[in-house]
Amino acid sequence: MAKINNIHLKNFRNFSAYKLSFDKKLNIFFGKNGCGKTNILEGISLIAKGRGIRNSNISNLIKKNENNFLIKNNLEIQNNNYDLEIFTENKIDKFKKVIKINDDLSKDSLEFLYQSVSFLTFTPEMERLFQSSPSYRRNFLDRLIFSGRNDYNRLINKYKKCLIERNKIIQNNSIDNDWLNHIEKEICTIGLEIHNLRCSQLNNINNNINILKKDHKFQFELELKIKDDFLKNDITFEKYQSILKDSRIHDKQYGGTKIGPHRSDILAIINKDFEAIILSTGQQKTVVLMILLAQCNYLVNNIYISPILLLDEIGSHLDLHNRELLLDMINRFEIQFFLTGTDKNLFSFVSTNAQYYNITS
Ligand SMILES: Nc1ncnc2c1ncn2[C@@H]1O[C@H](COP(=O)(O)OP(=O)(O)OP(=O)(O)O)[C@@H](O)[C@H]1O
Ligand SMILES: [Mg+2]
Image (cartoon, rainbow, N blue to C red; front, side, top):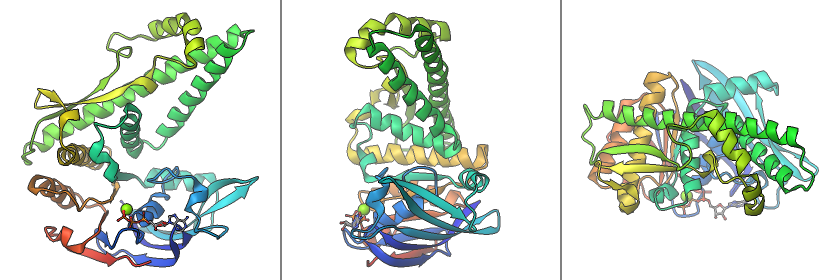
């Protein structure tokens, strides 16, 4: 299990110097709008690979008029303590996140950290998950996969690079056929891998919701599926490759590749009857909480990963059912939670022993 013992933010976002220690499993940040609650979650999320929960440009994380930020953490992984330092390196106006673990910058240490720490997040935008764009939903799903396999983003990045390369080649008047065939082969291999991982991730969630149904009365039935007119059950590598080849002229005019997992969407069927797009924002929050609960169950009980939950603005808009969902998540697992809301009273229903932090920057 991974647990964050403390965080010290220096010149990070709106904080000059701010230190918090975490002794309990449930930590609640409250305070007025703009006091820095989401910024603290963002600071915590930078422990993982990538640019954190806002996916912000690294340079925006530095406090205005300062040159660098420093985030210090003490982290507990399987009963051992590690001191982390997160800061940026500026190379030719390009900012890069750097993590030092016990003063060590080696790749092995970083790999160990990435393997040991996993985050699951809720952000207020997710209340409109099924009304936002397919790319938002794909990203949501990809983050869930990433929480269980930290090498997944490499696959996504490689796939994106191959698509860019294919587009470059087909725009060129003198096409290098061998190179194009090779790239398309890569696209099919990686594309199918991504598609299969997404399908199995959604299956895991569906299965875990069914398991949880035995002792949690959910408000409605939920089934998640991939929606893609091209990537269907009968898709094979050969078919994928030949359709890609046949669509080169079309894709040249279109300016990109028209088929593949970058065009997929996620469908949520409610009560075997209708799509989640017509749900209210509060009901969409229910769906997201069900997914997060199921994913926690999967990570903890199936692949023995203890995620850290970062739930931003989770306090507002919670009816009785959503409160029960959140409480179930908190009580069921021995993992660390960070919740935010504008008012302490929003969390009065939480019976678990929580630590409250009044955030004043
Ligand atoms: N690089 C930066 N330098 C200085 N201040 C920044 C920087 N980036 C963001 N801020 C400030 O941080 C504050 C926002 O913090 P944050 O989003 O964490 O607030 P919050 O407590 O989550 O508010 P809300 O309740 O509205 O969600 C804003 O006042 C914003 O101007
Ligand atoms: Mg916020």
